[in-house]
Image 1 (cartoon, rainbow, N blue to C red):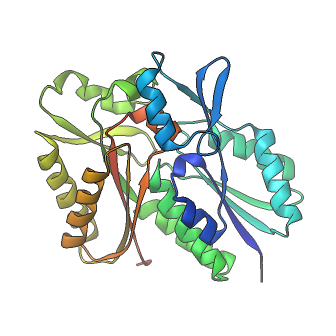
Image 2 (tube, rainbow, N blue to C red):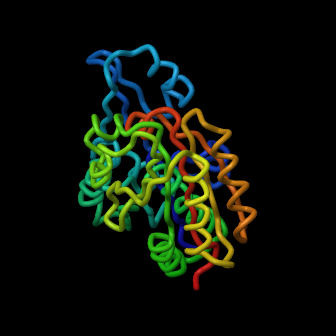
Length: 287
């Protein structure tokens, strides 16, 4: 049986229990508050510590991707441990250079190891929902051809919608993409954002207030997935109440097979800000 390992990065916001359960390797991105103050996302800076720090810091934190050398070290370590195939699934290349770093590392090891570097074109648990499914299947002993088919399907059928309290974080960090079109019209309007097929932030819709925004998201998910079984995950930045509300509403309207709730980590949090909530969905079976 081919030994398969799954690698992702810290922006997937996968709960620690799932990381441990399925043996997922998570490479951290960096959060920089000052020249002398750099942290590893989820390693030396937890989500709770990050949001506490964000309240007291005057300067907006910046983020940076892992280096190709870090990826190469990780891939070599997994190879030494017996890995024959590595799926390395990462944050949208429109939002970070992480995919590029992983691709460079892959090139240096192509003669030694089968490494499949994937641009998820997603962010936060919309990456995690794909990674967790792939890692579960790998642990069950599913072969590479089945994993390839499932991954292709997951990349096509996974969607994410998110609500932010303010667009200032996305704007200041240069990740706002096409959502800039709604900057001037947000007085009492709650923007519903999503990621395009190319992995860029765009304004999906807008609603007057969070309750109407939640209803619009639920309506969209119901239209998209119908009665097919789905996996869902909600990630939040200090807004667990709204995350739980989204989950309960989706469970009422759709055939939910599994649910995950998780915190938005420091890197994604630096770009979306406190109060953000996202809901990620994917089909539980290929059809």
